[in-house]
Length: 244
Ligand code: NAP
Image (tube, rainbow, N blue to C red):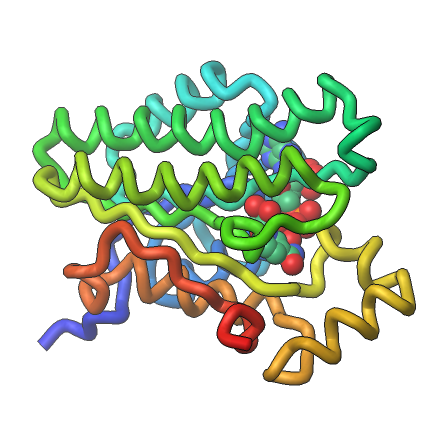
C-alpha cells in the first residue's frame, strides 16, 4: 500500500523558498518525494542544492498579477505553498500607505492570485491539487505595531476557508498552517530585543522558539493523501501558544 504521507510523482511550487520557513518547506516536500520548484525573488540555488534536485524559479510577488502569470506557465503543478510574506513594524498612527500596500500585495493579493492561477490550471486538466497558505498567530490575535501584517494574516485565514468551500468539489484542498514564533529573518528584531524575547519565550508552553522544520512537517502532511479529507483548516503549529 502506498504510504499516505509520501509525495512521489507530485510537482510542488513553494514561494519564498530561498530562506527560513519556505526553504524548510521545500526541503520537507522534496524529502517526501515531490519535485519542488523553489520560487523566490532572491536566488533559490542554495535550496535546490539542499534538496539535491528540483528547480529554482525567480518570482517577484510585489506585482501579484505578473507573478500569477509566471505560475500559470507551470501547468502541471499538484501543490502550491503560498509561504512568502513580509512584515513592516510601525505605530499604527504613523503607518504609511506605502507600507500598507506593500504588505497587502505580497501577503494577501499574491496569495489569492497565485491560488486562482493554480486552480484554473488544475480545473482545466480535470486534476485536483493542494494549496497550503502560511498564516500566523496574527490570523487570530492583533499583535502590536503590525496593522497591515495582522490584517493580511486574518485575510489569509478567511481566504483559505473561502477557496476551500468553492474548490472542494474540484478536488482542490485549501488549508493553512499558522506558525507560532519561529527563528527566521522575520523574527530577528523580536529575538534581538531581550525584553520581548524573554516575554515571548516565557509564554510558549513548549519552552522554545519554533524551528522552520516544525512547519515543514505540518505542510507536508497537508499535501499528501493522509490529509485527503482536510480542507478549510488552519493548523496551528505554535508550541501550544494559542492553547494557553
Ligand atoms: P523570512 O525568513 O523573512 O522569509 C520570507 C520569504 O518571503 C523570503 O523568502 C522572502 O524573500 C520572501 N519574500 C518577501 N517579499 C517577497 C516578494 N516581494 N516576492 C517574492 N518573495 C518575497 O520569514 P519566514 O519567517 O520564513 O516567513 C515565511 C512565512 O511565514 C511568512 O508568510 C510569514 O509571515 C510567516 N510566519 C512566520 C513566522 C515566524 O515566526 N517566523 C510566524 C508566523 C508566520 P527574500 O529573502 O528575498 O526577502
